[in-house]
Length: 87
Image 1 (tube, rainbow, N blue to C red):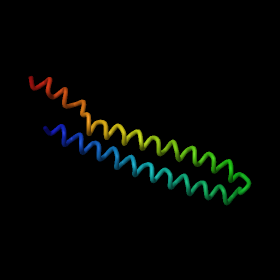
Image 2 (cartoon, rainbow, N blue to C red):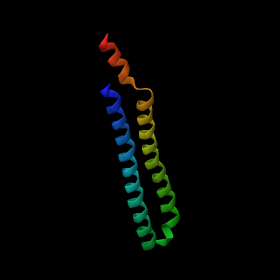
Image 3 (tube, rainbow, N blue to C red):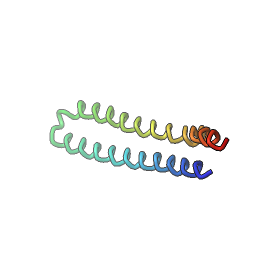
Image 4 (tube, rainbow, N blue to C red):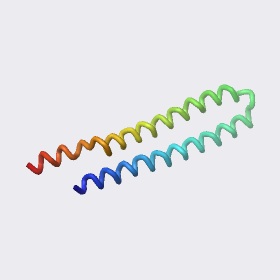
């Protein structure tokens, strides 16, 4: 039953690295937004709209990764293959 422990480890890595990447991406994007808004304040509304759209897409990618990791953790498709091999 090493597969269960490997799936738990993989799920943790998917969620952890996904969260880390999303945080870094949103942090960099936020800093670039502030820099560009300081340089051209007249474009602030357009930039803010684009920033929130991209923040939603970054978070959506992380949420999808979390959903896939939790799906593997609860309804593990690899256990069915192990049962077939064990017979």
